Amino acid sequence: MLVLGDSLSAEYGLGRGSGWVQLLAERLQAQQPPWSVVNASVSGETTAGGRSRIDALLSRHTPRVVIVELGGNDALRGLDLRATEANLDAIASAARAAGAAVLLLGMQVPPNYGATYADAFAAIFPRVARRHDAKLVPFLLAPIAGDTGRWFQPDRIHPTEAAQPLLLDVVWPALAPLLRASVAR
Image (cartoon, rainbow, N blue to C red; front, side, top):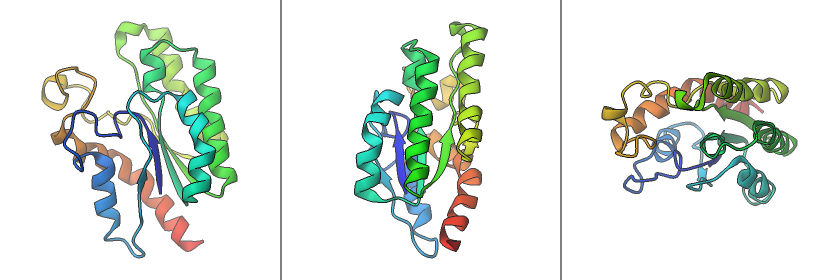
């Protein structure tokens, strides 16, 4: 399994081995057969950066499942949403062409970006998922978004270590069917 993400998946501000991707890897060790997880996440990564790296990662690791957790930095930088969507399309397309199932982890932006931008950004993820027959988690941060004081580091962007199991719990219901289907193949 390959996780292609940004700081939310790269353990920004957390102790090594405490992020949701590591918790996922630990949970998957109990599966039959056990899964290995490659965390190719990079803090600050944009969808363009992920697009530039996906082919080499697919070639090197030949994953059966690719989890894409990108887009938040695009929105925080106010990048063109059409480019964000095209990049996510290219990533999902490359993964599918390589024979991998895709799980897309959606993101939302704070309300200070304005409702029009926020709605347009959030709508990208379900469209990309539909086009590529990918599973979708509409908003990775859904269980913690309402309480920035409790679940977020002082920057109010990056989840705390205590929030990581909740993130895994959001990902797991969408991921589990992909795991079963991949084992059945």
